[in-house]
Length: 429
Image (cartoon, rainbow, N blue to C red; front, top):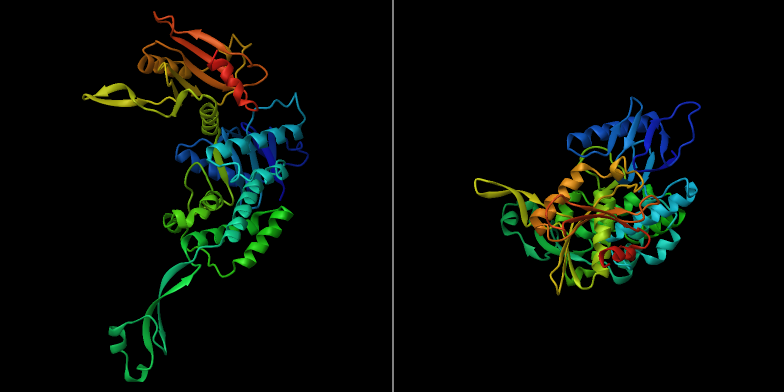
């Protein structure tokens, strides 16, 4: 089955005879794959996660989730961020830029160092789908782990032998009939590779062998499969993840754990245990953007303390107890002057020329920032909303709250995704 590449807010329809060619903004898939997406949509909606929106009997509209979805009929849909305009670049260039952005955001959100993210392989796979990039990181980490040495562990074994080894189980031996007195029920430890971490990695490798379509990935996966054939597969993935150990002796396993979770955990907005998910991974763009902005602020604002998701203030009291937390995305405070700035990130395209439509700003977002200004700053400093920089939003918008303080300002500033340092021009002016 073919692979499809779309972007946020794209439409997905059932293919029909003579239908247009699939594009980044509209994909035409088989009816069987479409029915599976409808089932997923119902499951997500039941749990409050909005990934798809029905736009007709045979059409779905995507929301702010990016990643990969695989259906039982082997249809694979890759969803990319939407931040490059098609009228300024050709479609292949847009795919390349948005894949690179998604990879960069995932490295930040998943707390990957440049070494763990496979800097060398990034260049080779920068034009490959997201799932192949993840598979590459997993295989590279697994190969490095084998070079360092796989950890063994002692496992308790109970068996019957004609010789004594370990500890004799006296009760069982005394209850044996005379004809079996030459057989010894024993219990002993075996030093082997059968431990939770290895079982999970081996199980993920089996998934990779089936899912990868890249020749280099397939070849390396088969080599690793032969080298680790003595490791059994996991019979209980969730239980084995709970037993995954950390520490100095297992430091080499820290790198591969994330990739194993991605392949076996199959990140989805809600749990769909018992149903087909394939190698499906979905990430909310709002959270990826928030983590990306916070990461670059920490790197560049050396004289500021940058914190995320603080919740020291509440908007109400109920029976003298605080209720309804106010939780801004980012809170920065100058180390010397103690100046505080509260920031929120919004993954939305703003148009500074659309004054009639209030630039695309939402009432709820502005009201939320007013609450932050009142409860966290007493209207003594500015609050900032950070939006992605686009052609129609390359300069800040400044508003004054309707209060007595002249310092109670709301600023909407652009964040240049390819050059994150440019945000400092607005914060430190």
